[in-house]
Image (tube, rainbow, N blue to C red; front, top):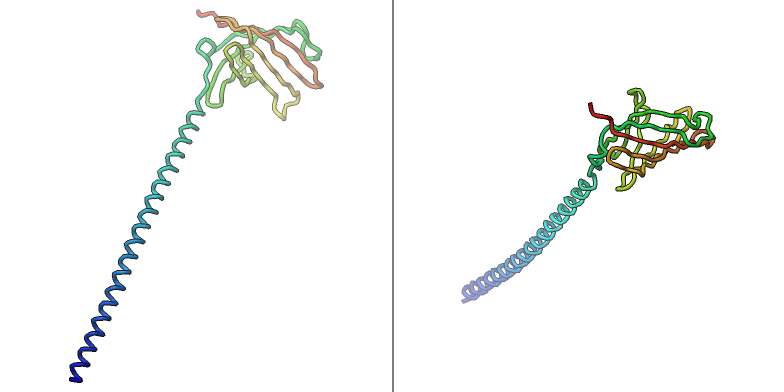
Amino acid sequence: MKKLFLLLITACTFISCENKKELDLQKREKALVLREEQLAEKEADYKSLLLMRDSIIAAKNDTIKNDITIKKWPKSLYGTWNGKLLCRESNCNNYVIGDERNEVWQFLSDSTGLYANVLNNKRLVRVFKAKYAEDKILFEFSSDSISKNKVKMNVVLDDIKENVIKGTQTITGQNNCSARFSVELTLPQKK
């Protein structure tokens, strides 16, 4: 009987240990399933944040690409013009009232913006930066820092017609001397 009692107690111990281990294992499985669900939620959040970031980056890139649109001269202005400049006012030694100059102006544009090359005897003498509004064109030029003669030129062309453009060029030179020229640009005669 003692043996049977011992056997019964041992069996109960094993059964209770089995149940305890089984319950412990079930708790661990539930905790693991819960952690997997939480991890899946975090992974879904992470993926949605990545998609949002990528869409924001794509939108910024599109905006940047759209901001880099190349400005162009209207067809009526683009190309080569013959320029005649006549000095109207001057307090500079380099410019005399009545002084006349003939130049060729090329209205061009690229990714840097609008500009005009000015040529004298087929040689480039300056490059004007340009701003264009519907009723006027503004040109600007400053000599570089290593030039002997510091010069700043501003041109306002505010009389724009089909084949003739007129305006004023102001030159500011050394010792704040200034000269004002009338500017008339005409399209070359086609041969």
